[in-house]
Image 1 (tube, rainbow, N blue to C red):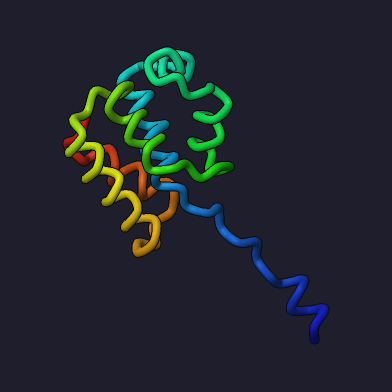
Image 2 (tube, helix red, strand yellow):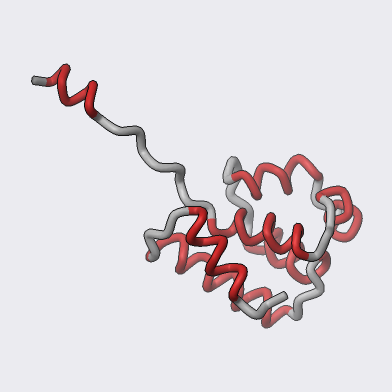
Length: 109
């Protein structure tokens, strides 16, 4: 029985990454490269890549710096966006595709 359960077990779906998805989608919409974010913020390209891919959790200060310096958001816009992304990460069971659709409809960029 244990073997049959193991064989029929489906792989876990890809972990959602609303913060990384937001950064990547917003950067693409604004046509900004990771290198440009590095120039504007001083955050290394490898760090930006790791945050976008979900390989690294970033401190709030790092995310706020990206949003304000690279995406030209106000401090308030950045803080509210970050708060909503954290809530989404915890509470909403959306797939990455669904998250992209939602992010595309938000009026923050």
